[in-house]
Amino acid sequence: TLREGDEVVVLPGVSCGACEACQGGDDNLCRQYAIVGEGRDGVCADYAVLPAANLAPKPRGLKFLQAASVALVFQTADAMLRKARLREGDTILVHAAGSGVGSAAVQLAKLRGAVVIGTAGGEAKARAARELGADFVIDSKTEDFAQRVRDLTDKRGVEVVFEHVGAVTFA
Image 1: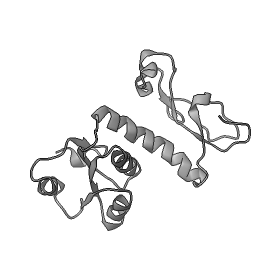
Image 2 (image 1 turned 180 degrees about the vertical axis):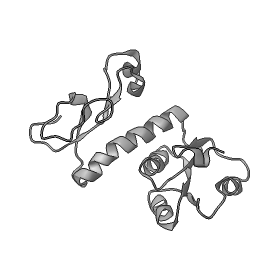
Image 3 (image 1 turned 30 degrees about the horizontal axis):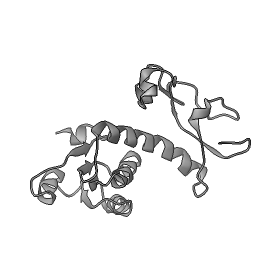
Image 4 (image 1 turned 90 degrees about the horizontal axis):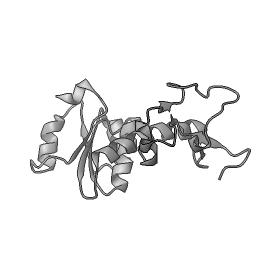
């Protein structure tokens, strides 16, 4: 429980909390769902009012900027992985594994027991994805990721493709 004066992180998805979607754990499907700062007033102010459900203790080891960014990218990645029904032992291809949402997906997929193949644009992002737990990382600037996935999986492919990049990877 939170007390007055505690450092907190805003969990940015606000929903009604009462509808069927909210009660079923799919609050992002609530008809009233909105992201703080997008579909409703933001928190770039001296004072803000939010539902208690949208506040969490700030992890002590993180700076405010780090803690604030974690909530949104992990929320997005978790919702995508739940929808994909990623299971232990599955192999997942995470596009842009060095990005915010991609790096969250790498970590959450590893926690679920998946084999993670990531794509990243350049060696620095590839290194970051490896450090977060990706089993294999494909440099999308220099390698054909589709062919490399076929090679890595003995032409079996993957159970889940985590796609949040857009038209660049659709084909």
